[in-house]
Image 1: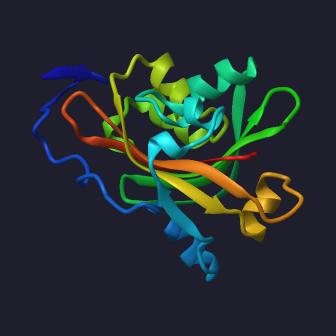
Image 2: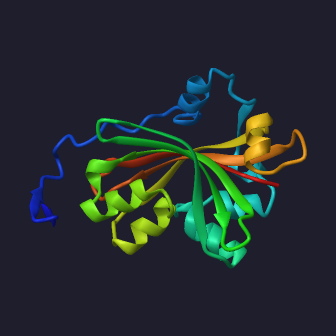
Length: 194
């Protein structure tokens, strides 16, 4: 048992749902809400991903720290859509470099708010900082469990979000962040621009 916000947390308590094992979840929920079909998305083996995408995607860490190290710049989010269901907070975002605002990732995430301290929950809901920065700041133990690697044909929505000139093949991953008790903190689809 650990302490959080003056209360005792039982690690066996059913705070959130089990991890979801779909390659497109929660991205599919945002497309369904727009009533548009998903882009063409296929699985790819990790060893088939070309560099530099491979070094940015094939790891057991958070994407924020990898992208900030690669681009040598801090990142913040630009939310595109969001909704909340009970303790589940969903958002579709672009990660952009500071201060250039160059997009470095398009993604969709579901975060289980109840598994975070109150201050971290507020940071998440402020919609400025990526989850990786918040996990680091609040010293929240987590593990990254990539479920699959993706090859995506950028549709018009993703093209607009990432400022692309047309249809391109992009690489990404479907990831689950889990806490010390293997409960899913977040379910994520992360797609990188060319």
